[in-house]
Length: 361
Image 1: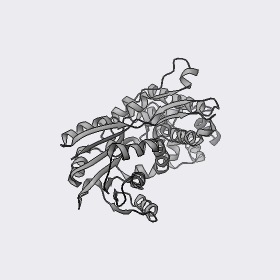
Image 2 (image 1 turned 180 degrees about the vertical axis):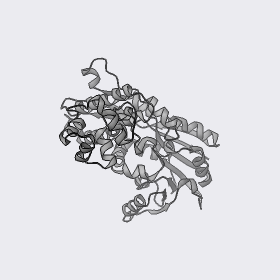
Image 3 (image 1 turned 135 degrees about the horizontal axis):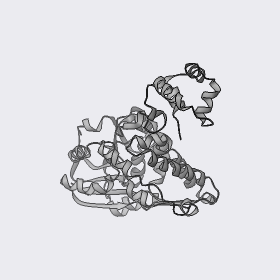
Image 4 (image 1 turned 90 degrees about the vertical axis):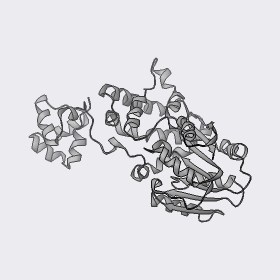
């Protein structure tokens, strides 16, 4: 059983000594309660709950803590700033660079310089991948709400031989002042409460015959494409089903875990033509005993241990509509996986679930 004494004490700003005085016990007793070395007597539970201003269910871990990330705003710069370092590593696992080059050169086939508009550009990652592969003379305009990421993008492109412009603007308020040959997004659409509204803005920004490229993920595909040796070691173990958690997010306007697969339909609704899609060729094989894969091994391990769900514990899942038992099942799996991944003989296989959806106006 997990008691949220430490979390609630720190939230109130009490020291262990102050809480001990209120409870008329020693501070060592409080310490033992917080570490799980000992549990408070049942008669202490109502008083602890009253001090913290919560129900006994919250104190005992049977109800979720009302954490700040319970209702995540995925289209808010606060979330993305908190995850900036994680995203930089995560992006190295999206696709293989030779496959991306194949898409640009042999599938999309840009023969003339292209004016690019990147919505939600962040620090210009997608522009840094596209511009070296496009005909000389191509230009790049990035739109981003976060001024710090724009500054980082401007610093990156400062000594590069490309014409780049960055606009600090909320995407919903964007009024394109010119038409572009190419409008792109990377992991934007699945995090928008109203993707159709943004598609209309993209359509307004495109030249006749211009191309739209939307890169996003289907987390259900990613989940189906995961296997680790832990499942073999613990006979009959299966990775927990996260779909109920993701469905909660969809119903609460947070993010849409299947957006990548929905994009062709949404493009059709907006009148786009020649709608096509590809899936990333990236399949991550985590194998720490293979030193030739050190970068990928390190990246996979870092991303896995810094996911929201991993860090949030049972409260993360209970705040997304699952029972305490289910939350404990999921967190137990994460904990055992983390221990397994530290073993020299561990191994995991994971697809990225990344789609490249493209169409013309």
